[in-house]
Image (cartoon, rainbow, N blue to C red):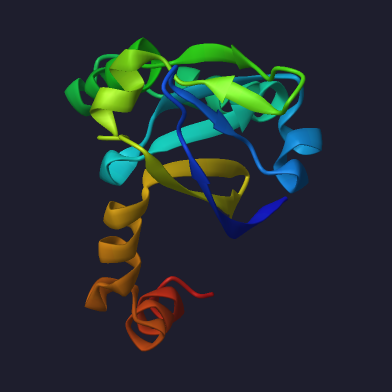
Length: 143
């Protein structure tokens, strides 16, 4: 399980250090893809397989299912950690997430998210992220 928040910088070659607490569970090779809210999602190979399996059960005749699958899979790439625990983020994914220099890397249960640090600050400081508001919505879901 992934949890916590870390800040790291992207170097001139487009590499970022993956926090050591995330490396073991992600594995030496993992999948990086476009995420929601203009961040990137990183999945271990096992978790990616589980997600892919679930998505395959959805009806491809549904326009939204096709659109989501295209978005999610077309943006995906297999990444590999180097000896320093860094990963090269492909240019298209850096552009999508508007990653420039400073990042926030957060653990979200089954995945890791990579955010532009300023965007994460805006998002996490937004009233949509208030604990009271979130708790009310989760209660409506039975959590």
